[in-house]
Image 1 (cartoon, rainbow, N blue to C red):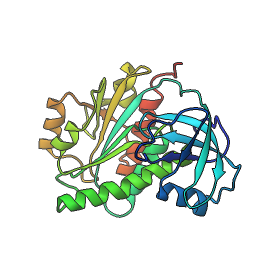
Image 2: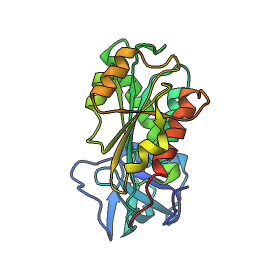
Image 3: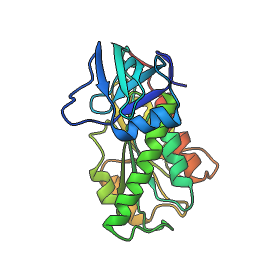
Image 4: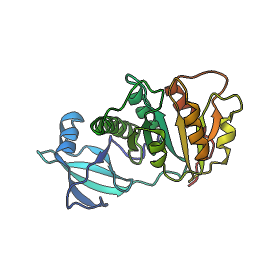
Length: 258
């Protein structure tokens, strides 16, 4: 679990035109959506403590509710200490059917992924039909990530994207120190060995294929882009469990550094 440095729930506030960055010892007004959430969902009264995260620069502050009228205002107190430097991760997860995408988005956020990229594999059952479909999925999954980031008290919500192909998904990944493709290939190295070069401050990328596995063409694309085949052990895991196992392996590969 993430350390709870302050008191009360954590809220990542939307940018309000003209407000600028959040600063200590100031008062801010919330957007209509954030005002509704704080007042009608969280039901925080005047004087209630909370933590306020600035989505733009990953800073978090102690705060209290100054007024709970139609436009809620907050008194911003001191900034909370930054989190220890650790490995940051991008998860590239092949789209699944049902609620699995939402579940993976929730878990990956709580485990600290900075980027979550859902992509349509050749063997994905779920198909992305249009740009409108991509946008709708991104909006829905971003809401899941925001809620999970607030609940688990992350420094900021992850960036959530939906790609219609593996090549597009790879283009969305920040520069990575270690690139991992979870694989069922017999010669795949244990994921602990593949992750052993990660150090605090490094960025890693993890690819999880569909339950029908990656095609030979997709494996070739990954290898040509520097991704190393990694084994999660002798058992064949469901894709959503494979994502969690891989994230945990990467997170534990490097000790925290201040």
